[in-house]
Every structure is written in structure tokens, then in C-alpha cells.
Image (cartoon, rainbow, N blue to C red; front, side):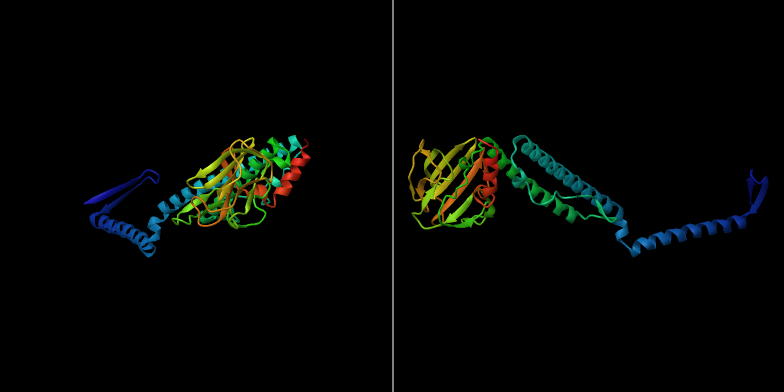
Length: 296
């Protein structure tokens, strides 16, 4: 058998007999086989290569999603800064005490050519979220100052003359069941019978026994600001009474769901629990100064 190969470009005809065709076929088969063996050997030496492409795609998708989340949080922080500046410019109040001392987090997918890990991005998200929540609390506090600019109308007076803070605002372990819960106030440990005082002027909206809080007093300070005093041994006021800042409203005790004599103290703004230390803590002086500067 003869095989005739014609080339239009060269204008030549090449005739191959059966033996030559077989030899060329074997050479082609060997070349294809050697390439296949080389590729297969490479993947056998590094099994991870088989999973590399889908793994990298999934990883990149995860990183992109986290990066978008970081960008959204940073944008919210920038908008809050802009809102705070507008509040300060329009009212004349020094808004700096209400802003976080930490700089706005700076993001980006790469640093010096190295892609950020998902762990790094997750940490940035946590930090930005905490910063965002803190600034929201601070602006809520600033709003209360704008609504009631007189410093004495804010619940800024400590409810006890003497006492040790035993539990903070935020997440904690429930002393009764060991579960993690959100503590909506702060606790002060003291001697039973210690006078409990109103943190600000207001009207008594609740004064009775509560199954959880025991003997409890709620004061309405106006404009959505309220304060709560729980676990008292005895109440000294009744619903409807007008109370002055610093007036004794109850005596410290251990009624209701309590492990011992202490005061559970809350401050709420429009029904949302606030960290009382933002009102009665070290930042209070700055807040009061800002309120005084606003006039009235």
C-alpha cells in the first residue's frame, strides 16, 4: 500500500509505502504518550494541583465577600463622621467627645502585593463593627444632649454614693444557668439598706415588685430617656411622683432574681438599653461641658 501526500504550498507530491506509514504512526503515538505521562506524573507528585483551581476559586469568592463587607462598614463609619460634623456645625456643640479616638479602619485587598487572608479580613470586620456600634451609641448620646441641653436633665449622677461595680454592660455569663446573656445595665455591690438616688430629675413611671428585678423603680426623664433601679429592699417613691436628681428613691437590697445585695442600674434611650457608664462615667464631664456650651 502506498500513501500519497500532496502539498499545495510546495507544489510537491510525497509517496509513502506501508512500512513508512507504520513508522510515522508509532513515532506520533510515542510523542503523545510521553506528553500524557509527563502531565500525569506532575499531578501525582502534587495531588493538591488537582484541587487547586476549584479551591482557589472558592477561596477568592470568600475573600471578595469579606472585602465587600469591610467596605460597607467603612462607608457607614464615614457617613457617621459626616453626620457628627454636621451636628457640630449646626449646633455649635463640640462633637469631638462623641467620636471614637481610633482612626477609621483602612482596608484593601492587597498590601505590598500580598493578598489579605480571610482571617485578616474577618478581624477587620470585627473591629469595624465594634467601632460602628460605639459611634452609634455616642451619636445617640449626642442626640440626647441636643434634645435636652441642660446637663442636669441627663441621668449623669451616680445612683450610689458608695458601691463597687460588679457587673458591666454587655455580654456576660448568667450566674443562675451559666448561659451567655446580654446584660442591659451595670451592677453595683453594696450594703443592704444603702440609699439609692435618682440619676436625674424625672417622674416615677413604675414603683412595684417585679418577678425578675424585685422591688424596682423606673424614672422617666423626658425625650425618651429613662433609668431603672432594681433589686431594692424598700421603695421610697410611688408612681406619679416628681423626683429631683440625687433624691433617695429606694434602699439597696436583694429582691427578685438576685444572688446578693446589689443595685441593677439601667439607662434607656427610646427603649434601647445604653451603657450607663457613657452617662455617669469619665466621659460625663465632657458631655456636660458640651451641653453647657450649646446655650439655654
